[in-house]
Image (cartoon, rainbow, N blue to C red; front, side):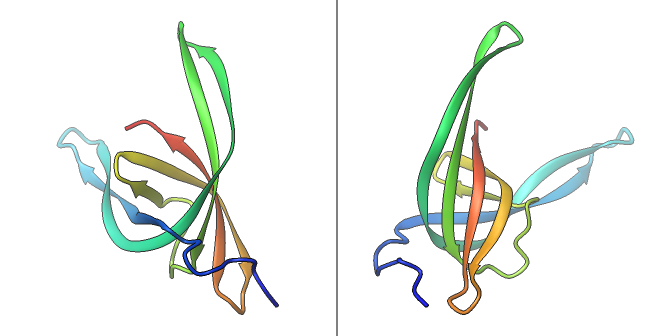
Length: 110
């Protein structure tokens, strides 16, 4: 069984970030993220849309990201590449024998 991935295909250095909540002192919480790992992946853009929201133009960019399996990865995590942030929307295990995951993600602005 082959995945179609060749050496050097996973060339994007991505940091895996996990959410945690910090009490804000007024009964609520503030969500923050901490880096929990480093993976190499392939980022492929899928598409984008633009919409008028709250009197301004909002863009939505989606990507397919292929990485090696990362234990405990869920849709609550996000990926960071430099200043770019990717919220994970769905995870698909492509080839269990080869341990690759395909992530469908939306690029967000910090």
